[in-house]
Length: 284
Image (cartoon, rainbow, N blue to C red; front, side, top):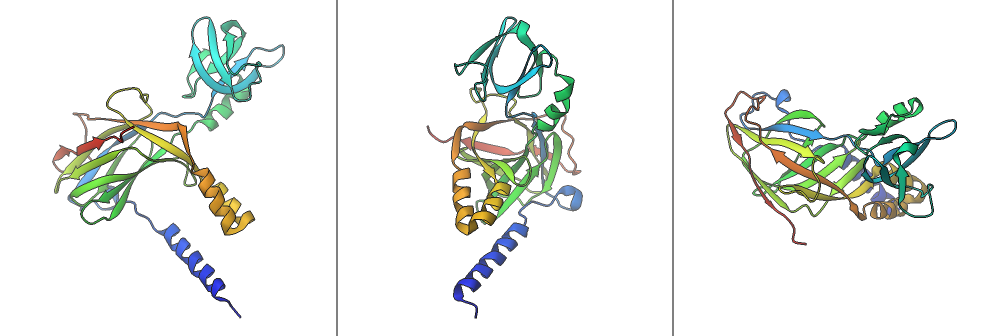
């Protein structure tokens, strides 16, 4: 005989399945060119790696060291290895003449060259995050998403109204994301019957100390690993993993700034007007 707990679990499973299958993405203009109001622009993202890469000259083959590059000039590189394997101190000063190659986290070769053996790995390690922007209609409280591909234009059909940005997530894929939080209150106004030009959205082209930027602190989330934990540890194991995996990391953030291009060409054949954006950052 089935117990009430069994039925509760079945209802929960079906509910989660339905939620997972639902989509909040706005309709792309390419899929409905009859819509009379759109939001359009471009999204640009610098490809990054988790670590800089240092290749040291050795007797036979260069030695690869991953870490954080603090500074670099014609004399030395100041580098913090991931596993401190270059010395007893946290920071190592590496003379330029001992470097076979030095690559920053954006994939730029600063010194020497990348050993042939590791060139393929370098390209595969580059991350080019997609950006999901969640918009909540202030009047109706309905929720929609712009799902932007890196270094591509976007054009979505949208209803006129005033929206608050309630989600800023940077995805490597559907399971791995830097989930934004405490990015302030961002309000955008969509006017009817025109192309609402959001602008060129740039992610990580500037630093958090620059002016006129939106700093997006993030927590790291790995949904695939969470699912695996759930299979091995049951529902409780999954829950514990999710909580642990979403703990904020003060060093993890993305920087957004927006620029307008006078030569912007929209997809929709409508008049163009810049989106009104109001940004109120959280007080520290």
